[in-house]
Image (cartoon, rainbow, N blue to C red; front, side):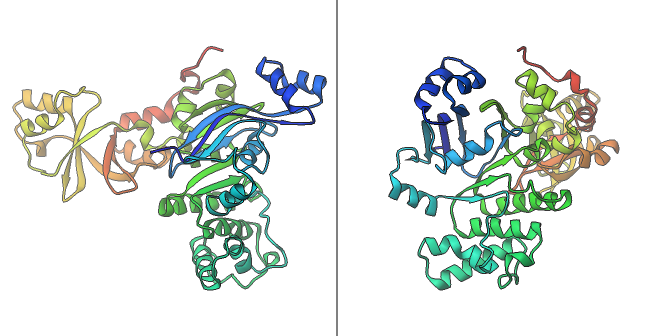
Length: 401
């Protein structure tokens, strides 16, 4: 399956002589020198990444890092100076004006930081706007707009003007407008940055819930590292127009790719960012509470003692977690059934942050991770949860620079 969005060697240079500036930046000349020599501003430098279908991909960076320039290149609000951008197999960079208009109508929607609502139109009319541009029938526009407003928690607000709404509600309208358009790629540029902290957190949770329901592909721009690590399945961190590192929250925190990334993540609250996914181990399920030790050992096979365990379930619900080493020890001690050994366990969503898992871990419970489809996919041992929370940030692996 092709990537949903693919960027290859994308550059963006502002000014009257971008070709000369492009030559210089490829030679390794600094942005400052290029500005002095050509009076051109280098915005994005050689950015490449793929975004998979249904992924939330976050681009994070401080002011001036190039993140907002990059997202505007993706849908060609800014023309890339060089490089290739694909939506599935559609080449956005070579599309003519008619093709680009069709791409923006049918493939990609955008949510802006400052809402970009029409003040003279009602909430309903704002949400219907993209559908009107698509020439959708009136009944279709109304029904899809109402559904989108319900999805973002604004059912019944369609008749009001934007001036009647709070900042958080206006941003919900902007999100509803993007969702109503029915595109499967959503670009969000600092969408929650102007909101108060509590409202911002609610909007983040709302976005994750909507993503779970719709599976839309999202590219999310932010300057907030905690927001990036909370929302992103993967995050690209930018600096001076370049991508410094791409990875999951766990990879970025535990194995920073440069001194800059290490310093940047130094004060991250690990317990509020790392999830069960970051510490879970593979499991083998046995839906028989009375199974024998030999049966359980047969299920775990020749797996590494430290990495495998079996989870005993009853009617699909986890009851006990038993490591392979515990099974071996039980067999040597003459214990015959699994009912006599193991740690209690309970199911928890795979995206549970470790701080929320701490109380169970402190009581000696292992947690069995459940994915979005309700499947039991891994286990987190109490020692792993507590160890990850207590890990000294300076013990993280560092890449020489």
